[in-house]
Length: 270
Picture 1 (cartoon, rainbow, N blue to C red):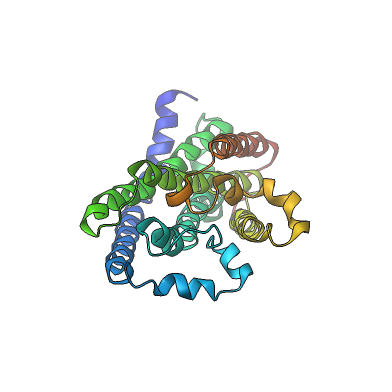
Picture 2 (picture 1 turned 45 degrees about the horizontal axis):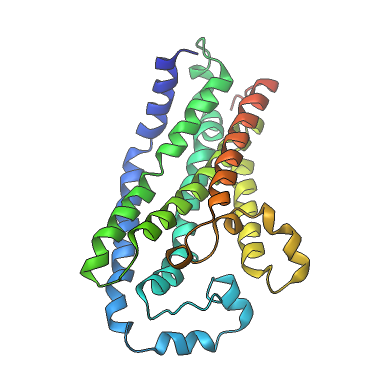
């Protein structure tokens, strides 16, 4: 497959979803702005720290509140309100949905067979669509810019470096699970499976990452959790350097596997 054809597949993958992507960017930035705007009214009260102290250990561990950080700080507040659950959830919904749509979704709709009737290798098409999945990390870029802009406005006192790390961690989570969804759809042609498999792994990985310190039998499984590799409370603690490499390599491996297996089956015609 020539480079121009590969670029066309990538361009088409992004262009077909551009309006929704713009909406995701605006919505995510608006949510971050709302949470940041709440912080000044709670910063000096100390009520949040007292409230967290009363939470069960399991709940604090699950949402990354057991590390000893203070919710009265901007970093601690945003870690708890944004990076512990809501932003990863939003990024994963976008990434998994996009990854599943780009191959299995098009196959279900009957569009993929016509496109691949041209002299284009299927595996090259999968790889090109993987680049389109990565391009949707634009949402994370918008989040990073929003956090940097809001930092002085609401006196969040965030480290720019740690903010960049936190956003990079979100992008890597989205890249991994988006590539896994794309690869699952390419390998099986099943849109439902392409959504369910990465979504199930993400849910399981989140629970393992949050609860392994409290349930010793979960501890050996922490290494298969993408969330554990990124780490908790990224604005306060940063992300694991090894985790960046592991998730990047896992994303590439998933994409290559999908590109290999797509050649081992016939396309389904609706």
